[in-house]
Image (cartoon, rainbow, N blue to C red; front, side, top):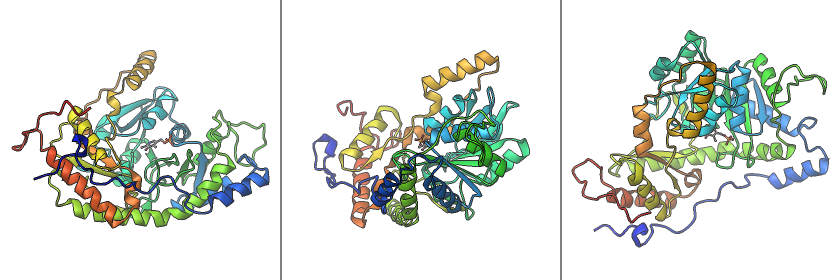
Length: 416
Ligand SMILES: *Cc1c(COP(=O)(O)O)cnc(C)c1O
């Protein structure tokens, strides 16, 4: 006899909190004080952000890194640096954070949503190729939850069709495809250091690239058009000011120092959790390509088979959260967002270009059935993992497949 769900007044599986995030990973306090005392607070004339850029480039085996204020504007800067302009199209998944699409729209470019692979939940190469038009200037693979997309196929399409590859690696610090870290697999790759990411300064971002000319244009995008080594009032490009402060740089250097160890812990815990979940009926994990040699493990994604989406999914997420497990329902699909659609309509109607069509059945399926555990759930103990499995077992039993044989539970309208 299953015990009552916590959301229905039963005993929660756990009440103890998971490890806090973010947490100081090293000597952040000392590093911050050093910047404070130095009087050098901005990064234009300082050495701290510059040092971080070198260290982060090395971590991702890229020749260059430009650190900047966040991932969203990092994507904008990267798109602009590879030459994406007004009316150009950028092919990306609809199952991603809104920043991927905002990045294109803010420079007058149009996001075109291609479907994901139903097994991996990541941008599907065949759908990507089908979405390319004569206006396509870039493809934006999103390495969701730290899993690299099929970069062999996507880079090959990019080369053959003359389209730039800008990786959205905002969730993929330390991830690798065929032993090569993500970021500089295409023309440029963008990371975020926002609070929920696996290394953070509260806010922040970085773009990496192997190409020196791109690095100069990225620097210019983040530094009001200046070039490295140029004079203060020498503006060779039109660019934003996206600079970080030295304070953020100081925190990021400490976070980066700790990142490989934390990543090993999250990878270990995620592998254990994956093994333990094979016994839980109705829970499926996204497939991971064998060519993924390092999984970034920023979130732990899973699918509840036959969940059915909508209110039923919201109830599942609420029920799991009530058991004491930090869980997010995940993305709702950018093609459903009215603000984005209005902006796309505004740009295409002004330019007289066709409004791209969206047909993404696999994405709808992922939206309906997928969710993820928050990053800090992977930094805990074996006991924590046991609680997660127990809670998922308990809740999934109460949500049998919608259209399956055991489908006796109606939508629970009282659970709001
Ligand atoms: C976090 C995130 C971004 C945006 O990064 P910010 O630093 O929050 O602007 C973009 N894309 C994805 C997939 C993300 O997870």
